[in-house]
Image (cartoon, rainbow, N blue to C red; front, top):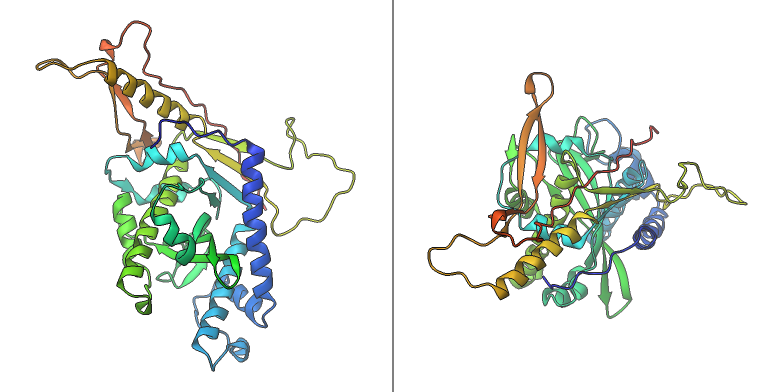
Length: 377
């Protein structure tokens, strides 16, 4: 990672980026929903029954002559249903790129699967940082797979064959629908969606286990060839890691979050406008900025450590100079009888702090999270 700290995005800049992405997705969903039967089949995917077959009255809309057309019909219905799930809360989690960098460096730790039941908001859209333009893989992803702006998180049950809310008691696994931009020769830059299942079986898991299980469950296209599928696997490992680390962090006991509601003023009251318009499917109710204070603080501490390494020499037999150790996930028990298992992320911390020169500090920061109770709908 570069020593240069990226410019901090303001709440309005984060909101504008999220709005553009959600608006484009809403238009795409609306376009495909005009296909007869798509909207109706999407509704059946969200119903409580466990019959995953296409209802008899909708089969007349299924394309029968073309396997590709049939696949597109089913994919459009799933995208529609997933977008409806997001529309129940209309929440965006915006991840700080520096924070994601340090989360990715966390040591391997066993994490209780139950902590993911404490997701603060149902079915959030996770807005990812801008991609690294120096990443050589980006050229291929930009023209063949797509560069994701973010992903909608939703629930899966019935062996991942049906969709539900992340807060639904039936949820067994998580689903991710990435929203990405891809450059094509024929149509220019277009929007694409990529869905995958994140298995959450077992009492405990590690981030690496989850990523491996997600890749194993993904349906790769045999027609693409080995080289293309290897690049797609690299894509999955990169972005599933980012999203899953984001989810884990917001489920920790005291995450660094800042809440911004576009339609609410500083006094907590609805902003008054001359003309109130009707709510739209692509409206965003809440933006939660994650790690925007802690990420830069950790990076500043790293820069201080790197600068000290350049000016000090370490002789044989001397103690280690002050330095940071990688962060890690840690669980603890709380509640009556200590029966509730919760998750914390232990930040990269300093050792041998007694050797710090006078006036030096470990650059630790105290983050007091801002919480927001989700409105009942």
